[in-house]
Image 1 (cartoon, rainbow, N blue to C red):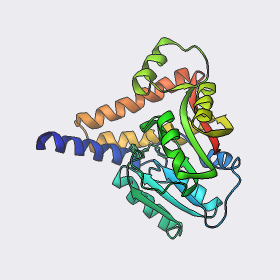
Image 2 (cartoon, protein in one colour; image 1 turned 30 degrees about the vertical axis):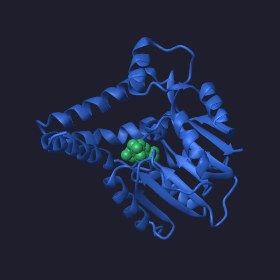
Image 3 (spheres, rainbow, N blue to C red; image 1 turned 90 degrees about the vertical axis):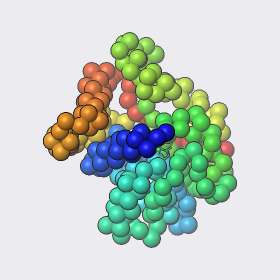
Length: 257
Ligand code: SAH
């Protein structure tokens, strides 16, 4: 890769990070839903070790930290998100037990059987649901939990337009029953699964983007990358409103056997 390409790439990342840093969550979710998922998990002692993988700026991590004891490590690939994550932890006075580090989810540095809980909202798709569940299993203690949210089909059949969109964006999207089977095969007892309500997409994810998009387009007027980014996000939101009865996110909670 020559320098010119490298700088264009870095600029892309910076823009994407700036766009998503302006909203509280970088994926569909809400504090209530984080707590609902947590309600299926019976831990957690004071010394518990928890990882939030693909934590973004930490919206869900701070909710977790305020409701359970233990130390939480937030993992994300993007330094801009991790900086904001650590600032968010400090603002809430959680900095002694909540720390963000830059690391890729396919190259984690935990010890085998170190963790009591692995959390990952709207992020495991970056490594793939099946691969993530399998590869991360070794870091959990026996009896430890994993809780991930993931794009899922609600029906056996879907209109061609939305089927095409997802097969292009994330071909591993699948029905909830197939995902649960994958969780079972990866060495977990499937403890619970539930669908995230539409409010997680609409009120908590797409609505906050509307004003951010306007500001962003003004700031980067004429910048093709910025315009394409906003165009893609708007397209994705439009498809969600049109086809939300066919897909969404589901939470999958498993216990390591
Ligand atoms: N969990 C957060 C963010 C979800 S968006 C929330 O629910 O709000 C997905 C996150 O995964 C982004 O923050 C992105 O930077 C991160 N990510 C993408 N690829 C990654 C990788 N290989 N390793 C770690 N994090 C990654």
